[in-house]
Image (cartoon, rainbow, N blue to C red; front, side):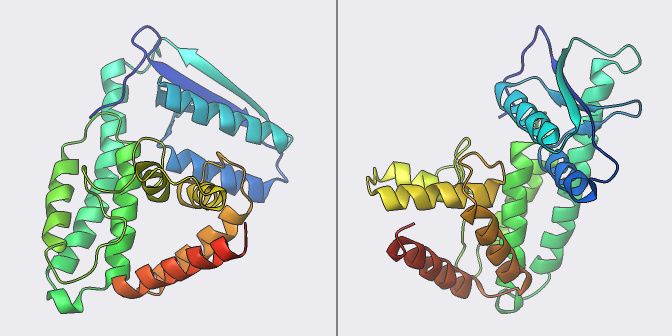
Length: 251
């Protein structure tokens, strides 16, 4: 399903500058630009379709840039005289096509292996990246369905899928991560579980929605485990042990 865009003012533009000495902050901002699927213009600035979610993301980035002693503005744009709307849309589609093609290549390599030899950790990373891409696939790229079908084939092995894409399953819903989905679905009222959900959201989505500093450390741990290409069942057990520890620590 595509995003609901503002038809009157279809685009958002982020223009900013950072002090030359702010190398680490510049890298952080660049990563956010990539995560949010922003398209860089040759002249200046970054573009997104005008939606409520995208505007919130741009405004959050602008605030972060100003915190780093930089300057930033978020502008609603009717159009660009040197870039027709259909061409701009094709540029977004082409950007996502490149992202999907990379994942398609990785999944095909895994499918060429027997189920017992497929590294569970690598498949988990592909699934997580696929979820991220869906969030910034603003114009329903045709390669999305192709990748969904290949992942479904990969899921037919004996591996235990963790946080996999499933429209009717327990995964990302709207702006919620999987843990938040479970928390809301089962109407859990424990405050410690709610705080853990906020930590996991900040770690998983990286938008600092709840401002939980623990989320940064948790993200580092999860990424470290993923790089070890651990089996799915071991990743699942480690994740449960970690959450159990957070709960009893009374976060």
